[in-house]
Image (cartoon, rainbow, N blue to C red):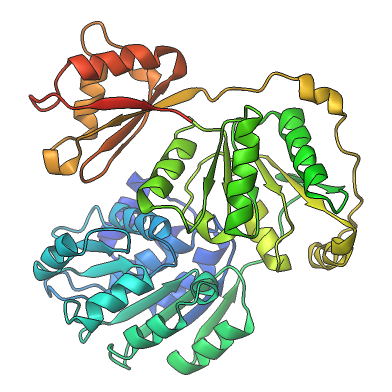
Length: 460
């Protein structure tokens, strides 16, 4: 179905064409009609299903830009996901003048957020902890709220945000539109829906994956950590993918597995909730710009991971819930591309394999692990390297300035420059590995905005 079949604002439809959105995904086709009609909605769909555009268009369609009040609130479990949602909403809103989308998350200074709130906003996107703090201190007024979105509601409850959610919802009008999006649908979701929603429409997009887009492989290993880690290395060397996400179930295991891989020469980083926010940002940036090959992650930390082409997903441990397994592997084989998903399990977990087989409606036959001869294989190095610049938005540094500095006289070519990410006080730029030293000298010895900034290549 085309977006043009919807009763969307003309400027929104025109902008959708310019950003390349033509046909709706299944979750958009099913959820947008009730959303645009102002109904409460519960929508279940996997990562990459297009849910952000679904609720984003709904918010923008009903927004009154001339009324400078917080009219919509989107709550997300992690800062990474909140940043991703904010970017998507801003992209969808390019045709709307003077709209303000504000992101409020923990791990960032409180003062600048207060200053931004004083200037007002139409849409606020944030994490429950920081939003609740702003509401409690009287900085964020939700009395004019018309729309509430709980994105990845299952993970917010899993992370213990129930109390913060209750405190936030208590401060908003009872008469509002509430949209709840979730990858899984545990009993807690049903309970919160009954309490805060009015006759919600139910939308459920099939969570199974086409075998043509994702090749699944299952390997039985001994109930021994040493053997499991050896199996992981064998799979990484056998498939030799440019990008891999390895899923673990706990923060401690995530860090230990990443450290073990690094000690064997793999390009690997961990991402989990115990890391400082700057380290989490840096890990995600380096992985998405292809200067690190392997990201070892917990399910929660991987929310907000925005990688166009993910070659391989490895379940180092099976997910605790079978539906989360589908959510994990759905990160590969997206947008028409093909992907590979490998899962390790021991004898104690065979019952989980049975549940997965039932859910996927197919038999699961364990395969033989690759021969240990692959340990002699040379690992593929990441194609890019990341350079950090100690200057960002507050120093008026823009992506175009960085690109210009790199490609000036005696510099590198534009095709050798990858993703550029600019934050408040620093920036990251990916360049081809073979020209990293040239790029580093070019910025270190040159000027950005008429100034010299400290730069360094991030290693390890």
